[in-house]
Length: 250
Image (cartoon, rainbow, N blue to C red; front, top):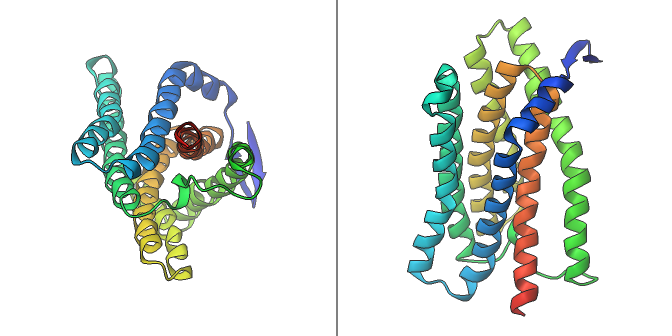
């Protein structure tokens, strides 16, 4: 199935997408739970007890899943696709390495941004409910818009107008995707928020490369939009976990 957007055909493949969900639903669910625990626990407990041994344990926990998933997806039974899985897996690992460093750098100094446990007006319960709505609606719209721009449109422009090779297109769109996330850096004078923005540029660049590789192989807007949205849902999971721990400990 294709839909027309700005003069180009946007591929939407329902059957492969359903097959993807059936084949990877467990991995996606485990990622959600793991990331929620990692971010929620780190953002709440670590501030109460910033013990170096705790940091070591949390780093081990944070990196255990991506290492395990890398080993699984590059195992012998998937050797036919090993180069693609290996490259995506290495980028996935690199993303977690950067995020682990960012997580403890930010949390050890202040409770800000996506891991905030502060109560908004209306109470923490209302805040948690708002996070769910935010994940379901706003992240969905952002995911569709960004994937239409950075994957579909830019892929078409670089391929048909500039005649670039696929590898260059994946690299270029990933770097542009990450670079545009630098804008919040210039809107704040708070040094910690600037540091968080730079970390975010690094992780979104890696995410852009991963999504670019997947799109280059499958050419499916539905798939990459869902994966982009799922990353947002996992971030919200960390917020919810931090909020629940805050309620439990307070």
